[in-house]
Image (cartoon, rainbow, N blue to C red; front, side, top):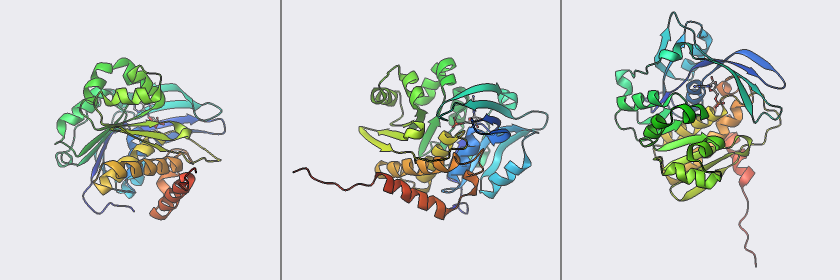
Length: 313
Ligand code: AMP
């Protein structure tokens, strides 16, 4: 399923990070993370990916090697020799559904000014992973009109950068947010009303991620529910949303048909990649996949919701 031979079809712009993750069962202090890292690696199983981001001199060489081994083009990854990589520290609650951010150090991210290499400007699919909305706008100014633009954001930007976020929402096609963010952005407490209100802000499709309860797609008047795979052992959910975005965007970039049925299939591939991601710290599990394992898990998703239509007489 790896699709690295052909010209890259998906451009991912976002954070590349070193995380310190604490779960009720274990802890990892130097976990490579970041929205762009997880998204790019997940998408790499479907399409050639270009990554734009920034790291410092402390970013591990092994992670660069691993991303390259997945065919991710890193020409757009800026390395600041006298700077430190963005760092995030979080602790998960007992049920692993909720977490608290304990520390955020912007480091090289503070002065990040995404500049796209000239050859990147025509990439047909663009994913603006979670970064400050003004930076997302700056990326949009540098690309020729892509076939589809997806965007992720977070509660912080809804709070502190709402005007910029509203501007960028008017220019994109698909917004991926979690349930709380959809409600915070719209001011609605009902999920359906919240999603419909967000659609009116610009994106014709809204994906609402609900952690272990799956994800909902609102597309035009249509609605689609994708389950999450019930797993016995969740090791580290950090990056599940980004891996979902990678599977989702990667599938659309691969099929080049970002409508109707393919949007639904993309939801299941997003859920599939997210289900692998949570089985290890950092990208331990996500990075070790191949097409047969992805296909087998995709089938498990189908079985999970497959039922016979029966008429009530
Ligand atoms: P997720 O679990 O999908 O929400 O993604 C977690 C990843 O987001 C971690 O690897 C963090 O390094 C990264 N992250 C946390 N806070 C921010 C932020 N303010 N901006 C960009 N990325 C962040």
